[in-house]
Length: 593
Image: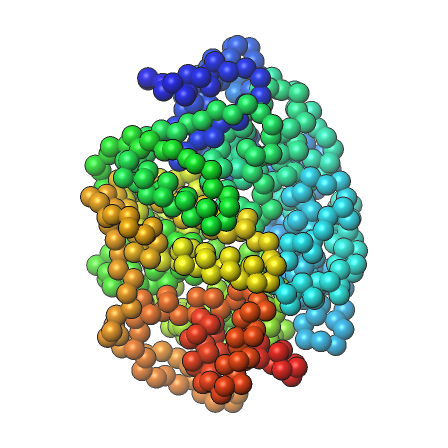
């Protein structure tokens, strides 16, 4: 194959280097050629981001007859060195909030669900520490990770207790009294300061390294190569850091994408210009050298599980002739939060069927209002998304999810799917011939509004906003051929082309079709149904900010509307939040809770 000048320069490099590679720029090919160009007796380690990338990379290095290259993930390395040595038992899915409360025997203080809110923050604190490069939990400031004012006040009042209980839980894992998590054995590996004995270490997807991973890597005596894309950092919520910015290595670039055309490249560059609003923009040039005309693999990509589920429901409802679809990752995980809470448990709480609830945390909630309060104090966005789905579709949910699962094909038959569904996080590293974006990504208008709110409250949350821009950039650059994008996500005055097709996001004047939907019954009453005019465009546009933090400016605006006697429905529509969220916030502001 013919290499570009940028690739040749990398192969001729010496010492520690970092490679900033745009989407589709052939970084794996470059890394393989780099390994080939090193002495045949060199011991080389390739660190992949996850298991799927590891398996794919192992096949490519084997095909290139590079038997001196060992392919691992940071976790697989740590597993071999820590889990086997200490005979630990690993808990694959992590711990639920209620399990932490039970193990630590956390007691409430008389306020509703205090023990579970505290346990939720203990769980997050443990994840924060295990992903950090610190030696001790008390060296971290977990409070700095909290953005919501109410949540921050709660954590402040319990902070010493949260730190103490987090250390106690870590101690129980260390002694083998309870099962350990994947985060824990990686942390224990990092604290042990291992030397791995390689001549070269190639670290892929470096923009999403945890500080713990980066610390292990940087302390190695090997010649080190970091490969990644600064603008593809999308795991900040998992406390990831951009190692391309952290490591003081000589910088090389891969700026030609072999995946998509110049039209897509131009849109990607224009999207990154949104970072001018966050004062974090550095000029990036992308040359689009892809020219495929194939349109076989088609994917719908969303920012959130909620956006994807709503789109999947729309898709199977409107296109009944579609027989086979595929979800990246385990389809069941789209109806579960990370801590195991099920969408069906939230639905049972909503319908007053508390006896059918399996999740112990949701069992402790007496009402939906209790759950909304818990969501606000913990900033649990996943639970918030579940509640929004339940409030929209009620008892229609089981039948809708069943229809989706009936059409979902197994991994082995992915190539037979007529449409692939995925969130951006799940399709990292993937590419498709045609991509359609769901209208749940950040827009320039939302970005400006968020920055204004940050300034009014003195909040420094630019890294999160930059990551939202990155998510849109990653989604756009998954396509090899054509892109179907909502007009609200398009940069101003950017033209539609043969490769870029606009999707109208205007709310239709007439509702779509009339369906039966369920309403939550009053205690002791039977479920009833009522006719509801439903439009999926309307559904997606409602309650878009339901569980975002309240700011001082929003609180003032809410109180003004309340004092003016505005109808609750008007306030709900104005703030894009559920009626329960509006009611709960007013109670807090009026001192009634």
